[in-house]
Length: 419
Image (cartoon, rainbow, N blue to C red; front, top):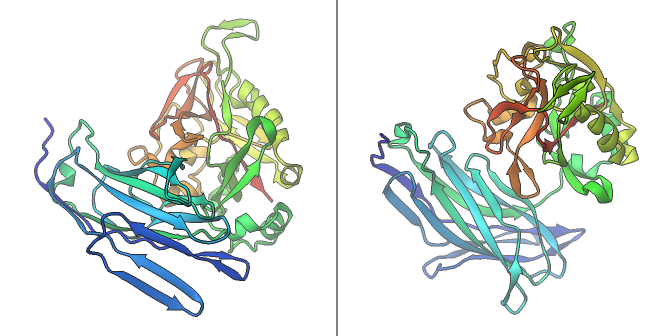
């Protein structure tokens, strides 16, 4: 039986901050919180730049139980003459609630210059309150207002939640200028030149960059997943997939099966197969031909070959080593504590720097979630499961890893190395 004893939760007032820089001029933004009759504005000036903070009423919630939630309305108006971008952030955050049970989400209405609702703007999907950045690079046109309704929820998990008795949460919401990273600003030739010379301090693990895969697949987000090369990468037979400068797709490009139902080597497989592993799979051919050729030529020119080690199924006895341009990840490259014996190659790779920094484990798994558009979705991994003849590993829509039959159609989110 779930014990829902008293738990104290303090949610402080919410501040909003937004500045936007365009060239040598400043596009001025105002930000407000509805229902702030008793709030005091504070203006901070530095040279010609003015920052306006508007403090809304403090929210206090005591003796809450799992299932509790509260809402807050926030408006962001672009009073400038140019379109711009902003991030939604926590200006300050203390969250003692464990197991990602405190989450935040938001719906958004789009108001025109007259203040009339004329549609919706991009919502903020429910996510654990763990990172300081809630949503990044939100576009807003001149004269437009984004009116958000934020929901903060203490999730009911239908499991023992006693560990969170007596824990506290407080935070101050904010909005900041979106500033592109050096990784976003540099072209691919510059990036790879810096990688080859070891001059990569300006590129941070987690930095992202959009890439256009053409009319078929559209624009997607690449993320720096790794920059380190520890000594274990030099071990004979060690996979190079989590060594060096590794980029991965932070979202799902499209969907595909690992292998279809049908005949392989004159044997009928009604649920697909994992015979001959990742290198002989339909997914391998799709990723290293169709997806690779959809990348811009200037990016293809700087992708290097990667020695990729992958596990085997029940019809094989040895792991596989292939030379890949693009590859899917393996479970150990995501979960720091992954130790499933059915992945026979788990000890021949390491966890990528990004997932290590996010603290992703088989129990703390929200950092492994990827989206297909705006929906969290299942995505494939390259490792075959050794207990059967037709299963590969995957990451579920909630970040959980498990295995399923190869003929299922799930998300494709490959990685590759530059150098």
